[in-house]
Image 1: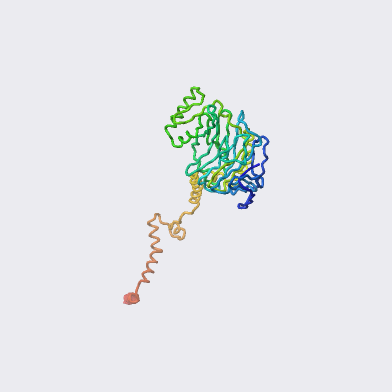
Image 2: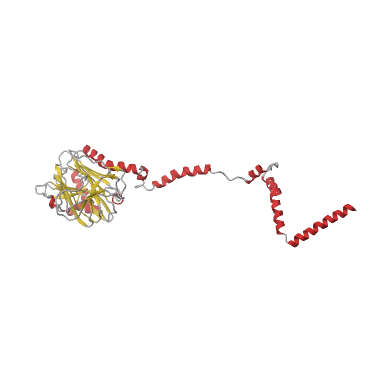
Length: 420
């Protein structure tokens, strides 16, 4: 049963021409929670503000594939559901994953999920930012800061109070996950050996130790500002821990650095939920999954995320998909495709006919042995005729009459000389 902030409605869209039918996913019996949002509507609404709907994705071409959509920007949204059974942190891993789709550019807002701490007093109808959680995980953006949070609440055995521990941010560019307008799969695996892994689209982007790579809230603030004071605190804490001083130790200026023999033993989890304030509307969530078995998670991923990737690979060649994060590949493609075409055209294009070769083919006269002789022959047979014709046209009528009289005189003189 899912509780949320208002009444729900199912929205059917035909914005895209569908090509491949979505295949409904079977819910694994071993899963603590699995929600593909295949139903037409959500269950009982709660009292929180905000609007949630189930509708078909605007991005995918899977006919009938639906997701949970946050509709109202700038409002508080809350929605939650109980697990099928309570998860206890013992000797099995925690596998948490879900999909997020930002159809618009994100200005400021989060899409992180919370695993709510088990308690006899837990009431999902009262779910808010004050509800205790064990783990918070997922993407978040505000301004130019892009983050993928992994935060857990750990009880300090010395004081009995709960403290937030933040994983260091990955050393990769996360901006594409907020701007490329494509769905992304976020996965968190926490293991009993005190290690964790964070994957996006099945690609490992961050990993570490719950002992060495988690910071308190105060230390996280110092990390963001690259504080030298925090670095001294971290160094001191690490040195104390390496000397087997495993009791809780405190550094200067309230930098609380908790060290515990069993950090994996966190508060049990009995519910999952989103509690968000986003300035971006139409954020879609899909295929939420919680398990303690990596193989079960792998099969779920193949049945859900695998369908989407199959459609994408079918409708968009891998070479084009590769250019999304590597735009310089377009230059490689142009050179690779264009160069053979240019070479082919240059080889197949006919050469310009040599005028002297043409002259040799059109005359029966002996061919000149060199270019100079050929030019003289051309002047004799062609250019001289053209010059004479041009000269005749340029003569004036008077000049032509004088030329005629001169011709008659020459003829008369020649005739007189013959008779004498």
